Image (cartoon, rainbow, N blue to C red; front, top):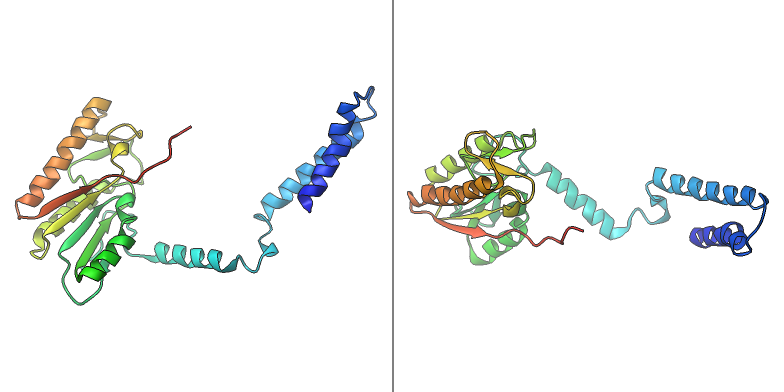
Length: 236
């Protein structure tokens, strides 16, 4: 109804006067009034967050999303500092068995957790999740440009590697991440010594980081599976 009212006012006081090629200033007052009314209505909608009271408390779908977000915010798997989750935390699947698979990577690795948990449940295995947003699984790399968001990545990844190597039950590590970001295409660069690399050097560091991580895991007989990034829509 509000949209119809605004449309009618716009037609009556803005479009119609222009179509009639009104002369003078007689059309200015109603046009300005209609414009002001539209602006006031827009501000009211913005300030009220879209009038949420128009629905039954958001409906079941909104309530489910709120519950899912609250669970995500409280999850110990959502690490922000340099510490990795404890050994008994962030386990996917079910059953009182030790995890034999590790999911390691950034937030794109974390988004694989629900599906991986279901697969682990049906196959009778446990998976340990070690993920941190913005941190590719590269223990010896610094991510540039520097930010508080990624400052703890080297410490986090170093702890993750040491923890995996010390666990004699682990036989497979799944590495996942938004790889195009860390190869320079997405604006982030990988550096071995903290100095700013060129895009080509960052790509070379990215390749060597994957190989070095896999080689370190192979010293303990652990296999590595590298999962590609999630599809993204093209930037306009």
